[in-house]
Length: 462
Ligand code: ARG
Image (tube, rainbow, N blue to C red; front, side):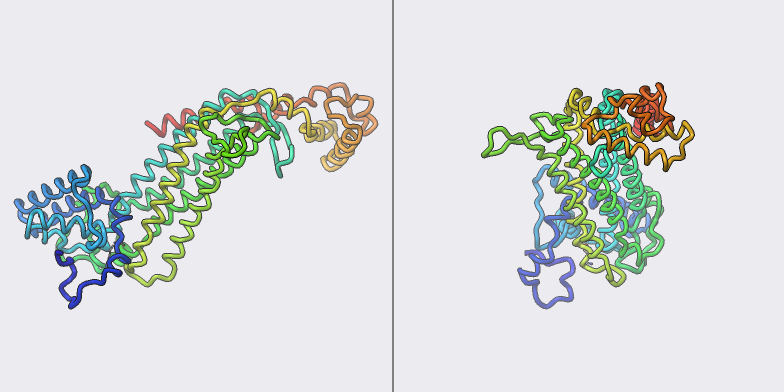
């Protein structure tokens, strides 16, 4: 077995149990591309610093290219005894190109190396997730556009509140997802600072051109303090937080899909290919995708908490504790992208049970608030109007009647301000149409919202 790159000061070989315990290769092997790209840029920086000759630089880059191909084609496998992806690649390089390979780590530490890899990785994952969110938004907009005039009960406390259109309800999720993209954009920006050139903690002795490295590796900023550069994992937290809030939003949508597709509500139908059956009850069709997404939210929150706890009270600068960050953030982002991917397909297939929604809006006094405003417009102070309509609702409830069917004569018993024009505002349609305020429920507003949303997505993709 070849000696470890750091074995010089050790009299005894590492215990097998410690090798097992400290190795992170099974987790961080997925950083191999970032690690190799970083090393290629670093070799060029070493050439500029006259540490590598042009021939040595060429040889190093060629060696790294071959390693990349070897890993891609699964011809190269990693070994636990080399702990992590960085030492595995360096060891393979040395075995391939000999002594020249031993120069690559000059002035670099695994501490600035891993921070650089992880930032590179999280940057592209943020872009990938933003594009998945955009796809989900686009499916949501399609569904909204097809349901501009589809009225349903709007809820607060899961009690029927006021009528809204299904489109308006769906567009609420468009808005949430838009803010999620903002959070991933900020996570991307915060990861976009180059640690490389910070060494183990104290910077590097050699004339490494960090501006050159930043440009080569696509970083728009450079970490300004070498201690901070190797200790900072805020950018990991930013991704984990963005992932958590996104999952919170998806969990709310999931909860509603579960409720709305239940026999009791029956507002929507989730397509067969996105449901599963029961091994025991032959009639069952379960909304497992929505339920699992709701469940996986807990897992992503857990990862955010793990990361916060992991970083708490760590003395500066690098500590091995930090190695634990990758498993948590990888799993959080994998979970998010799996949920988004399946949601994009599932939402495309959602069927709306129009008749059931139409029947549902007939019950629950959804236009009671409109009646309050009717009286307000007739000069009755809001609080008094509220009280009067409360009495009317109680009366209707006692007589098992919906507001729509109450006669003018009966209404007049509660207030002499009621006139013939009241009939016009008793329907859910009128109620929805009346909210022409910005952000309101009227079909014109929703059409506008859909149009803006589409333009926004096109703009974002351009
Ligand atoms: N694999 C480690 C990590 O992921 C990097 C190694 C730093 N090790 C060290 N002994 N300084 O954080």
